Image 1 (cartoon, rainbow, N blue to C red):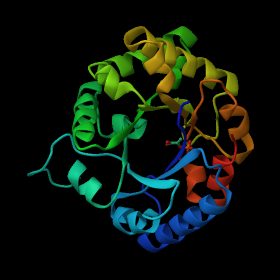
Image 2 (cartoon, rainbow, N blue to C red):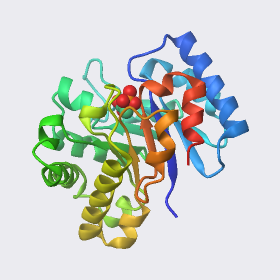
Image 3 (cartoon, rainbow, N blue to C red):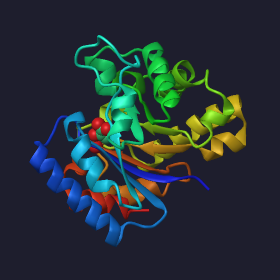
Image 4 (tube, rainbow, N blue to C red):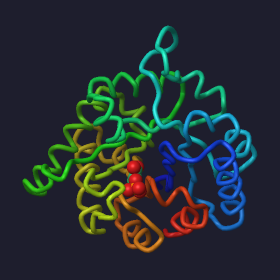
Length: 255
Ligand code: PEP
């Protein structure tokens, strides 16, 4: 059975104090309300990770993620954060390849392959983002499927089947991120099925069936249930709606 995951991406929001309040609310609500088979993750800004790491330390079902990591292990890389630094504050996950990193920081598929390797070598689990821009989608569904599958091939398909087992991928159509425009449940399911088929063609059906594929893009309490009902949708990566504990936990409860 695949892992069900709802991961928040706080992006560059919340002061430290605000973040600690949000994180404690999420931890308390998750303890009382989250289904026991769902892993709840908070992708906090780096500056929050130490404090939030302490808050989630004893929580059975809540973990923290970094929003990025350096491809380098350590050294003279001003402003960067290493995987060992991320691990040292208790994070288990790292979001990689978010479209905002790809667009504003020119992160290429090749750089992301290196970041994936660095994260895995440190035993940090990537939540690997992929997704097409509006102009790609407008060229047709098949063009969008190919674009996303090519992103995965370029950054992940050097990995062994063992490493790909239980991997986490987040499909996030760029045209749905922060726009209020959600992919329909059908569009999400169709893309997720294509992604799983693509992984199966390379690694076999058993590995493909173990990969958790999350949907991200204007997911909120009012649409999460319909989206998560897709046979190949294993949860969500949540931006805006992860900034309010009630909304976030309502999404967690949407399976
Ligand atoms: C995201 O950026 O990962 C995201 C899904 O954002 P939003 O939910 O705000 O569209």
